[in-house]
Amino acid sequence: MTSLNDNPRELPPALLRNVEFTEACRVRDFGRIFQLMTRRAGIPQSRIAALCGLTASRVSEVVASRRSITSIDVIERISDGLRIPGAMLGLAHRTWELPPQLVTASPSPVIPSPGGDAVPATRRSADLDDVLAVTDDAAVTPSAVSALRAFITDYWRQDDAHGGALLRPAVVGQLRHVQRLLRRDDGRGLKADLQAIEAELARLAGWAYFDARQYSKAQAYFTEALQSAQDAGDRQFAANVLSCMSLQATYEEEANEAVSLSQAAQDAARDTRSPALVMSMLYMREAFAQAVLRDGAACERAVARAHRHFERASVEEAPPWVRYFDETKLLVDTGIAYAQLGKAREAERLIAEGLRRENDAQQRGNQQRGRAFHAFWLASTRLQRGDLPQACDAATMALDLASTINSPRITAHVRDFHAQLRPYARETPVIAFEAHMRKMLA
Image 1 (cartoon, rainbow, N blue to C red):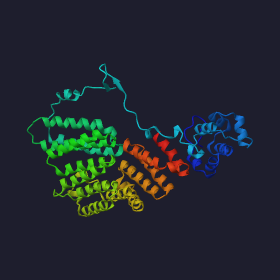
Image 2: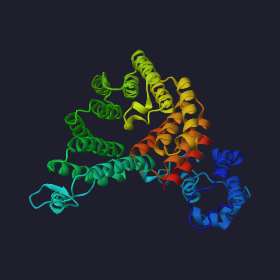
Image 3: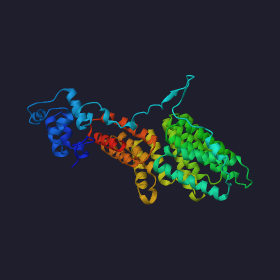
Image 4: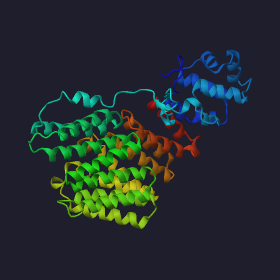
């Protein structure tokens, strides 16, 4: 039996959902509340008294209906001491209810320099990597190029499984290493390969900073990746980078810029070799941006073009970096575009079917972060439709999926969805979801 006999953390979820308990909280029947906590959570009356700052005799009198509790100060002490969510007792959210991840982080501390300018609290030599690189005289060989490509594949796998925030030092370090190799002329004819790898690493670095919601740094690396792709003459990869920049602009609520970037990406990839799958992905990026602009007709056109190109696509002939964009991904992205348009019924059907496929371990068992995002979108569409219990169930699934991922973007989705629940703060599904949220984000 779950107990709060030591330091209280959370009440048993079954108690939070119990109809008798929630009704007792709603009418502030503390005698019944104390009885149920003893019976269902295993907390003796003496412990209840200690946790709430009450005398044991007063708790006994309340349970026996000889005394009542009406003081707001005492009610707040009971909420805090017994970890009863504030909304259940008609209070505002208590300070312990919101995990630290849902509070915007403060800027890093700075230390004033003698001249009055602020400098970072920690510092290191920006030239250290270049100093150490002087001793690196390893030759650039085909096997080294293959190893670098293998690193990139593994980085993307780690990004999806754990989020991009922790990958940044490794990816940026590898990027600078490749750039040093490019500055050397060893006559082996591998410059084009290294330029392509440079572009891929720069895009991955941009994506890692994007996932960390450090948008200015992400933009800098995406710009670097775009220049590398152009130097390598790879128009399709340049389009890929532009599509990332379009998605970031959508997140930053710069929808017009997002449309322009997605259309520039389409122009870059058009008439290249086997562009169908690339074009399908690019049209979906435009659909996202048009949906944010609430331009339903333009969004529908982009979705239709994405589906037409997908029907003509050959996965084997497509670049490796776009092969993630399969039928399931197309289905879910279409649902997300419809969700942004407010077409909740169509969106829910598509996203739910996509998640069903993604949860099939044989098809997409590694798509941890993607499934977490999609589950939050499913929760949002169900909330739009007024299905609060199912919305909270989907959000709980998203939290479970995201529990091992270090992704500030996911935290932002948690914060946004939680804000949407404010009008329903006293409803049992919301209270249960918030308890699970505190557990997962503690």
